[in-house]
Length: 178
Image (cartoon, rainbow, N blue to C red; front, top):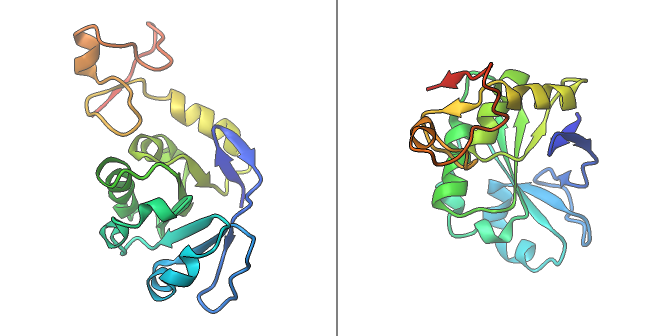
């Protein structure tokens, strides 16, 4: 599946390991929460990058004190109607201070890319063959927001008070989302 970062398809150097697979010494690997909890000492002693895969039912509070160990956290969307990963992404970014790669995996749809980005995701596994074009279109769709989020865009209130410009502002086309 293509990996989309910064609006471009990029090579994915991460290996997502099964719980019973051996851990290679020098590869960037991502493990499940269960494996992280079981093999914490072994995994933290590696010098290669470490990532974590959280299922939608696994709350990020379980790793709140450990986010500094991970260069990647992948949050699963098992189906497009399951939005728990949106909340988990915001918690990881805003409450737990996670600054590494936050990747959306599973049922990642073009219509959700902009909202995922606003919640703090910066990488997406997307099945769309025109993923880069879908990304650009998704980010340009709505330029003014009422609520603040992790992406730092000014809100409608900020704009009314003269604090910032909407992203991609075009006077002829400004749509808002609540």
